[in-house]
Length: 462
Image 1 (cartoon, rainbow, N blue to C red):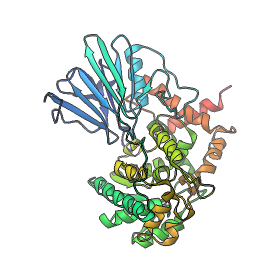
Image 2 (tube, rainbow, N blue to C red):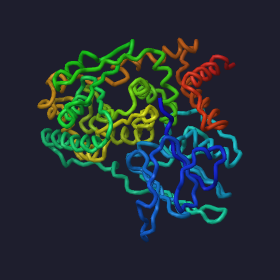
Image 3 (cartoon, rainbow, N blue to C red):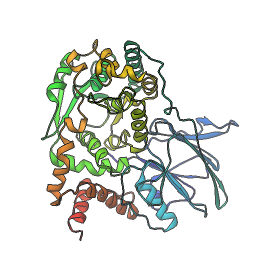
Image 4 (cartoon, helix red, strand yellow):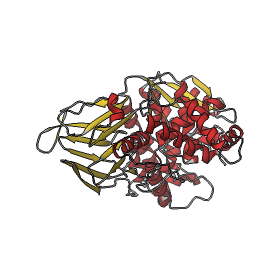
């Protein structure tokens, strides 16, 4: 286990974070980081050719620091969130980590912060903690330090994911275009220097990623995740056999799942039950995997190709559903790699890369229901890469395939001794970590301590 990665910039020094100081050459801003890639000062230049430092978050959110000016641009994807706050006295902070942002803000202002009662996903600029703002997708934030004051402007930029078209209007053309985009995406990710792995379930989404990955990286490792309550090992084995790779079957035990909850909640910055149920399996998997892996997944395909629709009662035009699901995902943070990075690895979600997204959003809706099936165009194209059974296999949500969708809430109830306690426990995990971060941000509790304290708080609540 490595350390939780985070980055924070502030208008003023943060006493509690001095041991994590990050030098920003020639900048009036103060930088702090933990397990974060060290920026190279002067490798970028502003409009006048003056050197600046660029920090990248989540692949395509950028923070450019030059002198007394900070420019932040969030992408349309906004995979890893940024949290910020400012007041009229010149205090300003922005961070990749909600808890570190809270700790810094308390240190600067002596204010009291608390977790919202609704600590789930907010479709707007609210974070799960009162007083901290989540910088939304497709935004540009400019902060200029002027003595003891700050001048701040925030505006919207072009949202490249807001538009859908019917450019690809035949199933074969659309399917092949998306496969080509996936191949390019995988090639870009393979610049990673470490070991390569892929999570497979036996379905078309992860199956295509694995098959295309095998073409470019024949030695990658294939994994399938199961729990005591369910798995898709047999389907995944069929896929692994078809692409000529051995399958590593990983069955998560209940305790490892529970211990992955704090890390999942922290990485997401919220306690939305369904998102946590989906994310906790991969967090638990990463905690067991040796560090240094690049892990490919099939996450995101359902969002951009079917709007999470299944074969039952699909509308002819699914553009509205796709727009809704894409937008939600830009706020849920469930595709962030922070939980994996805390374990020394990295996640790659090729379906959520810009080129693949654009291809999917430019595909005619009727094509996506070819043969009366969701993702029909993709399934058709998959036939030359996968067994037909895998290409057309009925969709199963990941947290149902591994059994967590039904069993995690019951596991938490059994552990807490209270009925329907899962949402309260998830929120309390955030509360417990906030309390610790406020006191000693550079000395986080272990997963077991966080879990124990959260459960104790729930079970002893009047």
